Length: 443
Ligand SMILES: Cc1ncc(COP(=O)(O)O)c(C=O)c1O
Image 1 (cartoon, rainbow, N blue to C red):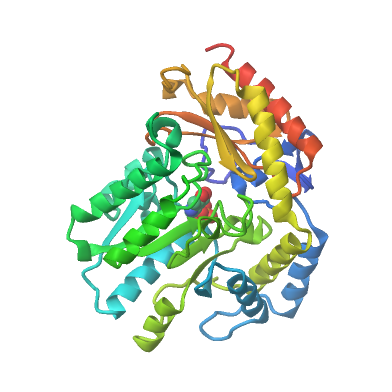
Image 2: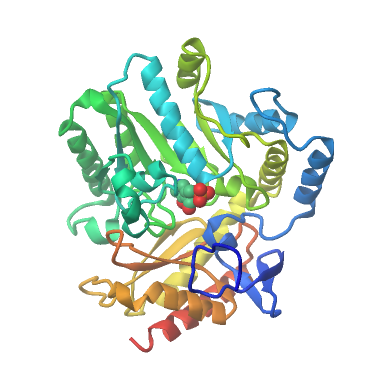
């Protein structure tokens, strides 16, 4: 038996031995087509890249690590310039961390320290959205809405107010346009602010495009513009969590820029190091940076590995390759091809209620009855069945549960690396179609 404390304690995991392009191989020699980008939408460049390996080796040989409170380092300085010069207007500074949860946690700490240092210490409340995932720190779990993951910890976690997310498939009314629906959801956010002392709200945290927790939920047009206006009106900081959907995954470098807004704080992670190294970042405005610089002069967050030189060198190379190879335009065209292939394979499947997503972040939501939109009984473990049937067919996708309310519901996210080709897209959808048929045939 393994000495590792695995997450899934009762499931035998295959052992991965190699990877190349969009394929990985396990120790039995089985080859998998990776439509999950490393299981959870990370590996934007696929598996293995000589240029990234070389950038890592070069930095490793120069100097791998020194704490960021003592020295700065060249890859971190260059990565920050690369990111802020392409960021939504107004985001001027980047702070580095080691992953998505640390990025969300840092965003919250930054927001709170800014409030304290600008005489707004009464602002303690965070508002977030249902059907979201924001990481596995106590703040991340509390801000997120995955009931199965958060339940054991809620008695020791911060109290977060949750408002509806943009779940058009279940919540848009038939006589509403997409825009009207988006404005209604944004109004529910404002209504929540009005139910508490208005100067007690610190920040609103939202995934710009929902990720694995919700099943690739894009916002209706106009929703984020209205959210931005509401935040401005009440002096609330807007934190867009683009740990999963950012840096090209949805066909835009930053999903919030595509919505026409700039948040006060933006978190990114998965596509930043693309799985080669653990890294994340938050980007923020001069207003927040200057308030802290002119106040205490020291940000109280930060970790031992913030700005680790090897991680920054790898991430910089990843971002340069994404730009040089025009990969975000491939995300857009392959995303559309994937979407069309999913529609033609599943639109007549009585168990597929919704097909949604943006760019190379697409999703099918599975239901037991298409007309009532009833979810399957969660005890049936439908999403795990799909995962197993897909793996048996040499396909990796991202199936999850809790789609509807954090407990009920099943969906499958399909999110291949940015380098995916047309042929591979067709292969993914063919294998997924067989896997879904097989997983659901006995139900
Ligand atoms: C939107 C979002 N925020 C935060 C996180 C947490 O990131 P990590 O698992 O790297 O800590 C995730 C991870 O899936 C995510 O999707």
